[in-house]
Length: 297
Image 1 (spheres, rainbow, N blue to C red):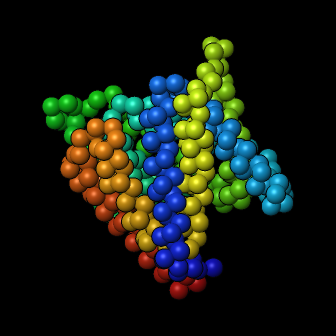
Image 2: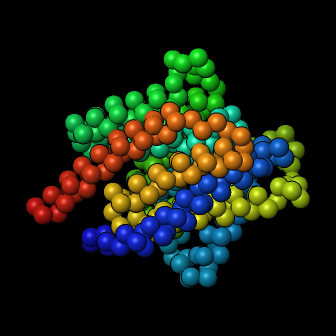
């Protein structure tokens, strides 16, 4: 079935996704003096699981929850959990705009690796986008500049690689189980991972009165961001949705400058734009290829 072409509705849903992702970054900054990344993930996952479980029960969709391919769910959620914690740690070390720009490189990594793990064809366009994406990463990170490759940049790049791995495993799972099933095991397993990692020393900090509202913002923001993005993709092609998602880069740059005294770095925006162009080229090529296959069939 073709994707419905409702760009205005998709744009409205994407505004929810942009707000959700920015809310995660801002709340992470606000919570960091009180909780470590594992504790943040624990409370975020608990809130997310409560929302998903309530949705399953109220909507009567328990039939969609199963233990099918639980091994793949476990691997996917371990990789995603690592990426999330690396992302939250990088959030404390580098400007938010720089972190977001590097995060946008995940789809390019997926496009380059997917042929080897998903059996997809490695096309010249994918190689071109990989080169462009790498150039964008170099512009954002500037490893040959005065600062070199800092720990924060390395952690952010590792986070992008982890997100790319999680995306590939998610694509495998979507061929087997419903999206709600993936979200259910995501929040449940990550609650367990975070509980083990945060509690290994038997000292799990409780949110302070100041941090508690931000913990709630982080938990709800995560669910809102991913659900809004999924809904937007169901209403319009990715070639329309992705450019809207890119707007969160300049938005978070302004937030960082106004509220956290982060420098407004034009090179981060330029590098992010190069990464965006690489993603755009790849999406256009994939869309055309899909249309050609539909016509042939």
